[in-house]
Length: 335
Ligand code: NAD
Image 1 (cartoon, protein in one colour):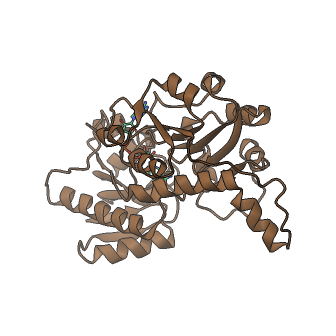
Image 2 (cartoon, rainbow, N blue to C red):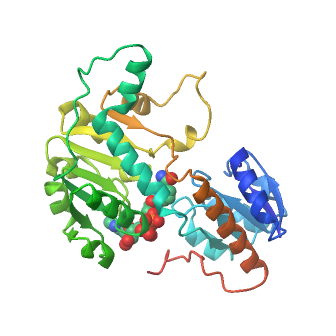
Image 3 (spheres, rainbow, N blue to C red):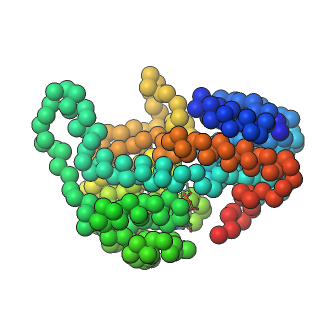
């Protein structure tokens, strides 16, 4: 099948081309993100392949449909960037990669937690400068602390397992409790109870209209003073301005992010010689107790292999008229 691959980085191409030996699709790689401005690049491609920051709104979908596109293949799990109702109304099928190494994201989550706690980012810079002072590097034991996990699907469940290994007490919130987490001893609470009781909060639920800005001023008011907040899910879960206020007051003692609500104009690009225009993001960068990575939690060899394999298999299933088991319907994903 002829596929226009948007937001292509060299690593995407390497993994997709290697896996495509088994599928033989006609892949055409485009560097730009898919937006209404770049949608003409998809003209006469029956399938397009997109990633987390491609913006597939109603107008883009209408143009895609007019130009002959029948399939949108997401090479990620989240689908918050696609207008599913518009796709349905235009007769375009949407497929995704529901699971690709939950370990990649869960392990990065724990790496961020260890980093902010033990200040590895600061220690690394100091030691390179010949500064071996320990002032300002004081951390705390994770053992015995309470970790609140919001969303205990594939990634949240792996985080629960790892944090159980650290000797943490596990609390969770999810509309669908996960028996694997309950077997580890995780106790499911309401979201507001979880906020009240957690020393460390880590977000692993999807971004939906319901979860948008779930971490806002009200939620922060409920949390312990000195809470640690980790977000490797989607930036829109957090009201960043409210979080900045909470960092200034000390309500949040440590913040670690792999995602940011306005990341589409920043992440995945080298902007090191440009003036970053986003003042909220640059304010975040000034805090000594904040660590940010640029949406790299998924970025392991294992995950990229699985993403490429599932994406191409999804396209093959559609081309052969088979049932697309990774289809995302207008209602989202049936659990
Ligand atoms: P999953 O579907 O296995 O699990 C999501 C869980 O969230 C489910 O158990 C679901 O019931 C729960 N949930 C739904 N609505 C909720 C709500 N309102 N409150 C609390 N929980 C809710 O997904 P997953 O594979 O574990 O991925 C989780 C998220 O991680 C994805 O939605 C995606 O946004 C993000 N992600 C980030 C990266 C990265 O590189 N940073 C990579 C992959 C996924």
